[in-house]
Amino acid sequence: MSSVRSELVSDDDIETFSRDGVVCLQQVIGPEWIESLRAGVASNMANPSPRARLWNRDAQGRESRYDSQVWQDIPEYRRFVLEGPMAEITGRLMGSSAVNFFFDAIFTRTPGNQFRTPFHQDEPYWSVEGFDTCSSWMPLVSVERCSALEFVRGSHRWTERYQQTNFGAMTGDERDQVDFTSDDRVPFPDIEGDRDSFDIVSWDMEPGDVAIFNARMIHGGSGNLAPDRDLQVFNTQWLGDDVRVRFREEGMDPDHSQVMRSVGLAPGDRIGTDLYPQVWKRPELAAH
Image 1: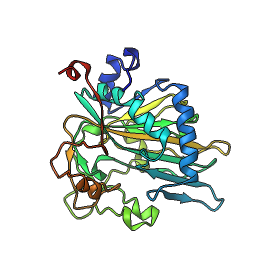
Image 2: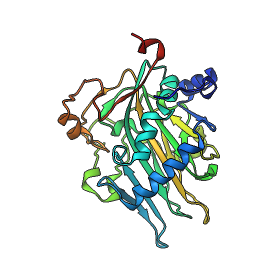
Image 3: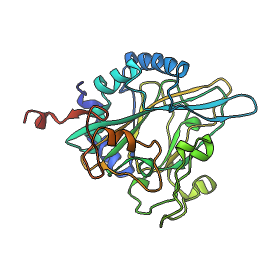
Image 4: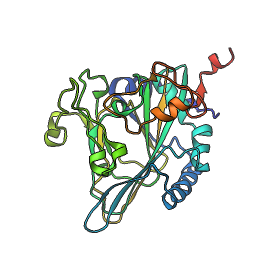
């Protein structure tokens, strides 16, 4: 487990994260981690896991690809998860006593790709439920603001339950199907069609920067690449104190229910086991 210098997460960062639901931390990930993760992504893309998906390919052959839950198979990913600074950074932002790793998600887009991820929230897709959640969006290459992930500031505290996008309709894979229309959820707001009505934030980002956001945050985008710009993002998800296992009738993407059951986790349980290890605990608590 690594130590985080106090200046990497300031009191202002913690306040911003609580209020806005997202904070962009600059140059908190060292170049040695970035180089290692780039090597891991190259290996991953050459040998994708069964979870890999082609999200989009246009007429010019420009692609958007995704892979997930491969941290135990890619040594560079595993080292970053277990030894890198992200667990402590997210734990301090959330104000949690301890942090467990949930899963990794890798996004790559070839130069000039224009596909934009639809606006959505993460937690409604997950096999867990709770407010104390973090996703970290960490580009491994330079990203212009117009091509970066966008966030609707403060939306993590909205109380409506929305009908989310069925990403299975994009991948065409039956394993990704999620049906959010069978309960009392309200239609998702048309963020893209009425952008001026929402407080949308994003940043120019360099390798070493990371945008960390609550999993109930409405976010999307990360398309509109220039012809000479590609995109590589290593995304990790982290769980804090109030998160518990939940299997959802509408489906889950990614669906962890089978592997959770195989290691004895049941609805209402605190996350844990070697699949979802506790990577950080507050020093004042770790001594007890």
